[in-house]
Amino acid sequence: MRSILSALALAAAVWMSAGCSDFKAPSVEGRVVDATIHSVTLLTAEGDSLSVSTLGTDPMLVPGVLPGDVVRIYYVTLPDETMQALELNVTEPSAYRLLPGIWRDCSSTEEVGLVLAEDGSAQATGLEPLQDWSLDGDQLVLTTVLSEEPKTTGTLLLQIRKLDVDSLVVGAPGREYAFSRQQ
Image (cartoon, rainbow, N blue to C red; front, side, top):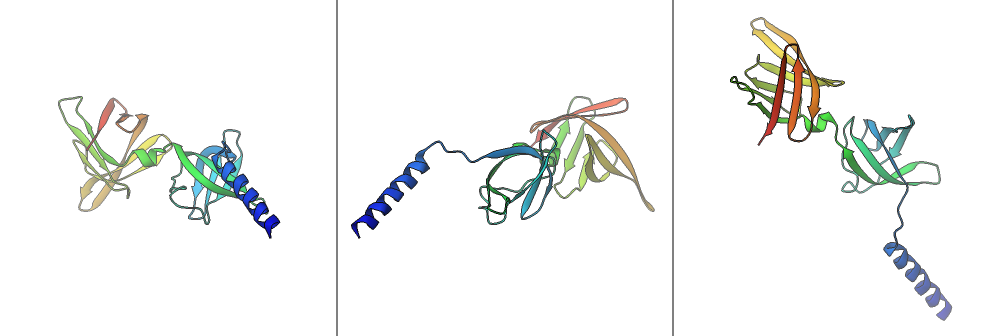
């Protein structure tokens, strides 16, 4: 009985010291190309496509991701060679994550504003009425409403030149807009 207690005490001491060490799980970094409720597929800088399972992982440690996000995933390899996520960090958010919001360009006498909603709908001030927005590579695609009866739409393509949390600079032929995020 005493040897069993000694073995348990030794195991507990090893486990507790391992928790205090600088042990780091292996990690992989890449751009999200697909994400489901149970997995994330990355394209690494080396051109490899990897799928990492998120099934059974604490959602607080593995938040939702969007296509285009650059992420670092800490993982363990299961006996069946599946990569199981332990933790996921978004290191570079995608344009899909940064674009939704209220944007205003005050650089000219005519005020121009955009409201880009997370559901893809859009509104504008100082431009044609908008119906929705999407991304095509590095272009912001705005569907404009040209007339209501009969409903006719057009497309306004704006080249994204700069995008971060606070600013959006886009260009169209003969015009550039420098938007600031509004609260």
